[in-house]
Length: 139
Image (cartoon, rainbow, N blue to C red; front, side, top):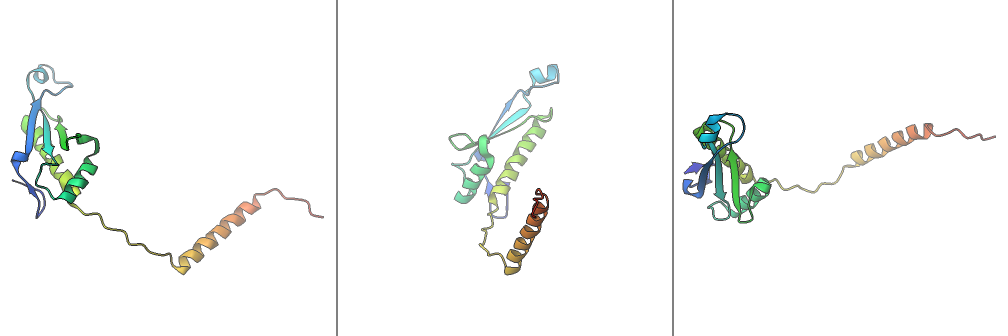
């Protein structure tokens, strides 16, 4: 079990990892060893609460396939275990962010003094603009 929050944890069976060859510099080592990891997590089929699933899909964006599978890849280091750990950390942090319920905004009205301040600032601004106008001859 991977502990996410106090009341959310996911089973390791829900995560599929595939090791692939990483590109970039590294010479012969990079061509021989599969150190990059592609982590797959089925959001739709997971045991996460429904509201967390919805927020996770929204947060993950393009990393979620049409089937609801989250793809996370890590190819930063030349170590398979380090990349695996980083990919899992990315998954855990994403689920932690999705577990936080957004605070609902309460509608409020501006106070009288706030309205008055806004009008006063508009008058000052308008006065400054009025001074920039061409002076007309009034005789």
